[in-house]
Image (cartoon, rainbow, N blue to C red; front, side):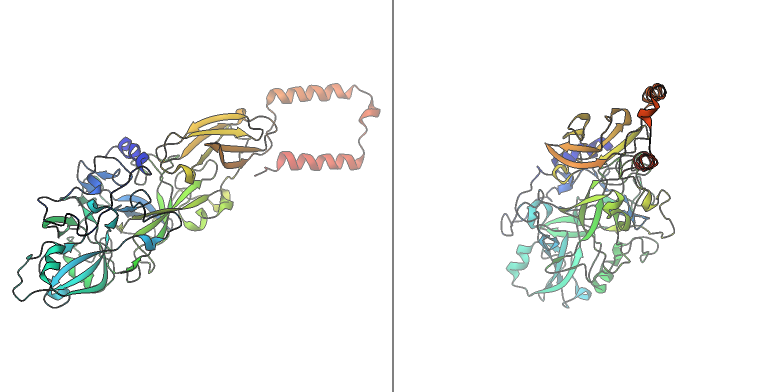
Length: 486
């Protein structure tokens, strides 16, 4: 997967919409499995990080409370992918739950016969969900494996259907798709086998991750194919509180992948873009409140001169006093964590929380202003104007494909007397940054010295400074020249 493909895809985020689907429409048997959203010819944030060449889901790098974590990215639930359902002002309760039918002779997992049967596919639009409630179907007396291959078969049989309340994280994936090993990377595959299911009489692949009951985890245990099927790095986690038949609970994700300053792709990049910074979560699989559904907290502002990985936990990055500013977006994404978590592998690039720069330091040759804005999420080529406090434009740039700007402001470009820098986009001031008083350059200092020398030849009567006046001037000098104004 090439970086330019990843970045070029993102502009479609707010312009891409998927069709509505509903049970009962074209419910006859299909001849072949429909394409998934990951295989669409139209590039979008949904499929930009899917490795089509190798038919593989990438194990992205991120941070979990200052230690490395990995995750896969499946269905996105956003205003563009679920129009009319997911919207600003909504909640995770708006993320749909669909049904998966399992025929059983006992009413439970111990009597399951044949493959699960899906209610919807990603091709059905915003009625589809990765999160599915198991419906146990009482098997007819003479039932054979896979006699039922569609929901229509189940309904027409008149068989008893028992809602279980058990929720599976069971994303539909392209046939033959694999999962990247989070440790080995490359084209190495994680030791997880797919779950073959039926959808309108054709076989469709899925993978199972978090479930809400132990018996569900036990039933799907055979999908963990490693030497230790209970390896916590790849285990099916039982999370009783992350979902029920009414909806899914979301946990927050701080999204900084739109920024690239200090990132070397393939070395310290994150995902979905390998050229961007690593995103951050504060809950993982061992935590009771963990959920694979993540609410995106979009980072609007980073501290001045911020470099990748200098912060990697919520305690630091949710404090505006540290120079960070976030926007709670109406965007959710299914990102089950995968791989081991080594609590001893603490981020080596952390800097003290009180060291982040919140203003322009004119004693430096230049300062990097890095940010985004909720009005520009996933919008490329938005013109950005850097202005002095009198409205003078002192620099220009534009947003990248994810709607972020990164601008190096040279100190020599800042007019004398400037107290504040504004970042303007679409005629809206999206950020203001305080400037410490600009020091005089060498020529200005020489001119000042000459003026002082000339002044000494003038009448002493006109230069008498009382003790109180001298004290006041010293105090002013200290305040203005030695104390940075941030």
